[in-house]
Image 1: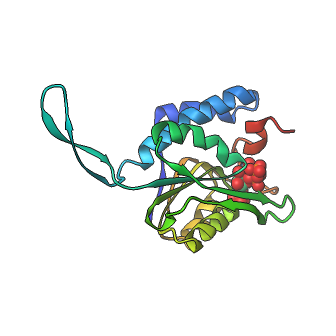
Image 2 (image 1 turned 180 degrees about the vertical axis):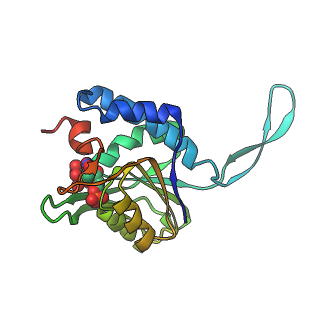
Length: 207
Ligand code: PRP
Ligand code: URA
């Protein structure tokens, strides 16, 4: 499967605002909402559609409607920040939740919560998280979702590191990855360089 880095001037502009350490929590979230909408538009480009007969004010016509349930799965906490933007574009999406945190020393992810709508096996499941660093959190989340029957999974992250992309490509070769940016590397603390810092802390104003 493929890894796609979106090449769009608006996304680059808004992501630069988010990366700036002087950007406030409020403006950080505002730009995340806007990028989420743009990413939702891109990743749903090929969602199945079916015919729908309607009456325009002028005549009958055969239009189209989305023909697959979409389930968004934010990886808590920071993934929550992508939900509003996606839901603005896909209002019929159902939402699953998976809670993960990385041990700050070992960088190993720990799952603390999981709750999903039924019907994952027939849905397009879009896992969202701003950061793909070592890839451990996303990989564990995807594994959990697969064990619940999901077969059609996309991973959408704002900023990825080469290490995280390589892990997902190795452990989940059936999952397409979409990024707003592919950064240079991880530092010794497992943070993406240049990155944007701790996405959850910046989103929620945690110190
Ligand atoms: C961040 C981020 C990802 C994870 C990425 O979450 O939102 O879930 O780190 O790192 P990885 O690719 O190395 O696993 P964090 O563990 O900081 O939890 P939080 O969202 O609650 O802040
Ligand atoms: N998690 C974050 O929030 N930021 C990083 O750079 C890496 C992991």
